[in-house]
Structure formats: structure tokens, C-alpha cells
Amino acid sequence: MVKEKACRNCRMVVEEEEKCPNCKGTNFTTFWRGYVIILDPENSEIAKKLGTTRPGKFALRLSR
Ligand SMILES: [Zn+2]
Image (tube, rainbow, N blue to C red; front, side, top):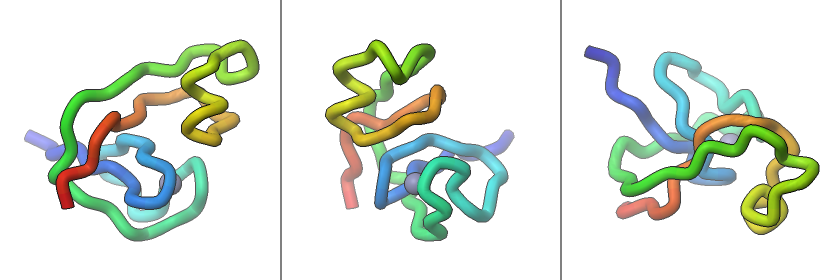
């Protein structure tokens, strides 16, 4: 089973990527809770809050 991890910089949740597809960051944590799926970043208030322009899965909280 692949453990999902969240980017510490932009909170995007990925599985096997070594670099965040959203912000190109390489700092991930597996300690995160809750997530939102953003399908349409252009029209999403949550996407604006997170500062993302890409659709995807984003962690709501990082624990560490
Ligand atoms: Zn990122």
C-alpha cells in the first residue's frame, strides 16, 4: 500500500512523486489530516485560500 504524503509548502497530497507537482517542493509529511478535492481551482474559494491553481487533493491540516 502506498502511503500518501502531503507537501509542507502547498499541502497537495501525492503518492509516489518525489517533487510536488503543484509547487515543485520536495518537503513532504505523512502526518496530515483531512483533505479537500479541488476540481475547478479557478472557481474555488478553497483553492484561492490554499493558493493553488491546480486541481488535486489537498490536506487540511499538517500535524508536523
Ligand atoms: Zn507543494
